[in-house]
Length: 295
Image 1 (spheres, rainbow, N blue to C red):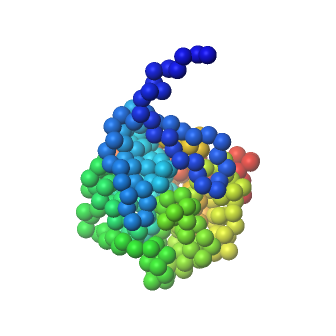
Image 2: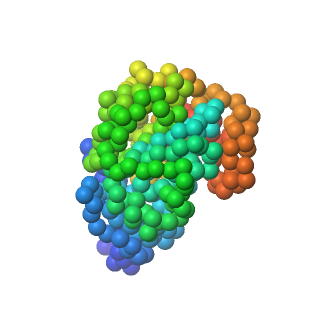
Image 3: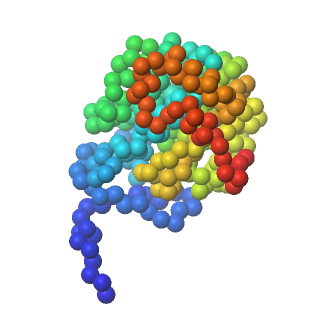
């Protein structure tokens, strides 16, 4: 029998298998330092540092992002819908308590930014232990936040938001209700006539289980529905991850790169230099699918 390598005696975080969904592996991250470990009224919360990944946020045993790759997630989920819209004025973020979507959104000349987050503690802990994510965006004068159920909040608005970003947890725990058909109908009604929504979804490895059924739930309400691809090295999916963008009138996948580039320059100006992942060519490339993932 081979001797056990010394690293087996070091502290490791083993990610929880996703409940009810096919998984054949677990990911392990070396714990360099524990930052926070506790519970809120809604979920378990764990923040730790890992070599190579930096600080990592874990909710109910599932990794939400690492310091090394969160910019990929947040730049994609924010700028793809905002730059697909010809002139967005009002944005709503559902979830996203870490402040990453908000950080990217405040770079745009929006008139009003709203957020609804069910877990107040996630926001407080992110401000304290993960400030590199929001970078002060919670203090933006255009911004207001409500701590309540996202479905109930959105039902109060009709034909109001130009862009809605649903940055939820996975379809278990408090995020489960944000993956149901009646929620998509509520989002549709809250959007303006040319509104765009984007939803955190899951790995492409669960294409038939999550991605394709979500598209079917959205198509009765939105003319254009596209998966959006992005790499997330810290996720157990093996890198390829999926958002779903849905639009009433605008096809985000067919906007000319020159138009996206013009909007990026006009709206972000010098702030565009802060982007590490998103570019106009990447905007369109993110919606190019291999044959096996075409809807």
